Image (cartoon, rainbow over all chains, first blue to last red):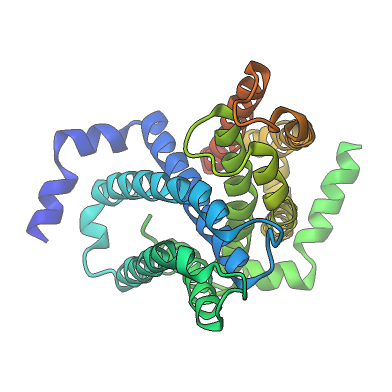
Length: 159
Length: 164
């Protein structure tokens, strides 16, 4: 609690959150980077499941999309941290916010697992069933992340 | 014309299913999540091709190949986003329709953005054949990227124009 009070009152965080123009920009950046992050990883997942870009090599598609996922994640984390910091004491003890972060962490871990293994799964015999299952869990975790994220303001009035 | 539109909005937000969404703490976020999931597919795949045209990032595929690989889920994303968006709109149609940020978003930026996207998507078939894209492709890719950022900005500005 002490830390969140301090954080919310630092000069940089107040400057980024108190102006309507800057805070709206940060908010838009948060949405936009989320679209890049989720859009890119979900397309790789859909390719592995076997319902997208079937004529394209999964490894090649994944290699072109993964950098977008990482840039999206970095910008999403940065803008999300600024938004969080602006109202840090309100998020303290907010269980829906903690749930959102936990689901995102799980989704990122599954994303890394997918990225690390695409090369091995991409065989002439087809994508192994276990890989399809993992891709499905990754996809589902991102949808749950989005849902958990919109539940935070809806149920707790914060954000 | 405006009167007709307003009457339609009034009718829409009083339909049973619109009242169901707006009246429940639980269902509204589900509908928001549908809108954002669709947008992630639509905007995410749009920007992936735009960045590719701009020459930013790795290119295992040509832009034409990537464009083609993402095509089906690109439009599926828009369909999901429009479905969720219409449901959100129906919960408070009369206040959305008079909101300047919403008017800007749905009346101008989104229709022009979709036309711009169709042009870029069609042209990418020729622009994106070689790994190195022509100047016009880079310009149009950059323009589309900025365009959807502007759409998101108009959307995020809607609450600032709410009154009554």
